[in-house]
Length: 218
Image (cartoon, rainbow, N blue to C red; front, top):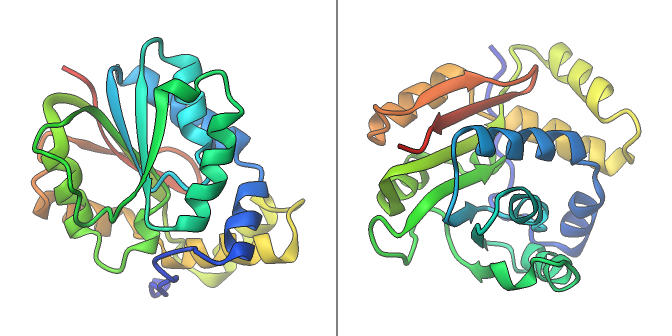
């Protein structure tokens, strides 16, 4: 089994934020929002680790009446997200806040839906994050936490980079490879989710590189 090698928790340099914003996430983000729709996500939503804010735009386009608060620990990422928000038709339904996923300053059961795309691998110990996500989600709310999954060998990791980042810059390919190396395995996510109290959620294998912890709206 390939050992987990951590990435920096916060992508806050100008190069990191800019290169990540420029990467083509169209397919993965579209599939993510498709799943949110299928899970019945609606109402007031929290996007944990929003990055450059691509997904809130898609959510507001696809889900009528949805409002999204995106949080991130990186000020640089939030600056890019705000630029995208102000230029969109859904600017009034989206807002952003600098916040730590492991210690959220929101009341219990504050959101109808909580979602997060590919930040688990940035967090050395994801248990506090998963506990906080559960705390701020309403009892019958929808959940979708998707992340990369760590391959079982360096050779497989390199295959995935070649397959899914063929047209990327060398730096973007390195970002993707490092993220795969830092990701959890399905077993690790399952054990952590159980410790966090997510007994009513399921784990799904979504692609050759993605797994999700999810729960449909009741």
